[in-house]
Image (cartoon, rainbow, N blue to C red; front, side, top):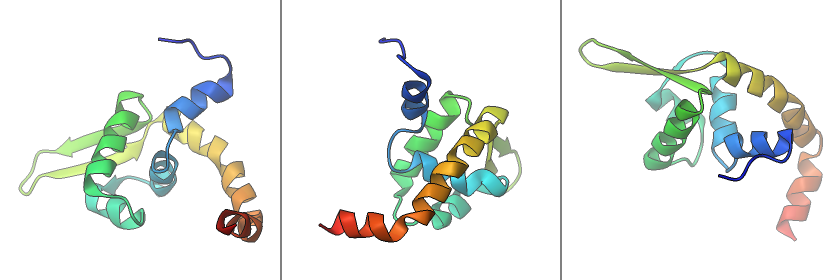
Length: 109
C-alpha cells in the first residue's frame, strides 16, 4: 500500500467518489435508517449505497447499529471521526453553493 503524501491525499481517499460526501452530509443532522438515506440522496442505487456505507463503516467514519426487534431496524450515524470530517466539508459546501451558477455553466460547456 502506498503511503499518503499529504493530508488532502488521506482525506480524498476516505471521501473519494460521488456518493460518500453526500452520505456524510445527509447524516449530519443525526442517525438515519437505510431507506431514509436512500431517499435523501437522489440518484443513488441501493447497491451503491450499501457499498459506500460499508466502506465508510470500515474506515470508522459511519457507525451501523442493528436493533434486534421485529421488524429488524438498522440505523447509520456519524462517528466522532465522521463528525469531524463533516466539519471539514462545510466550507467546501459553502464554496459550491456560492459558485453554483458558474460551475453549472462551465459543466455544460
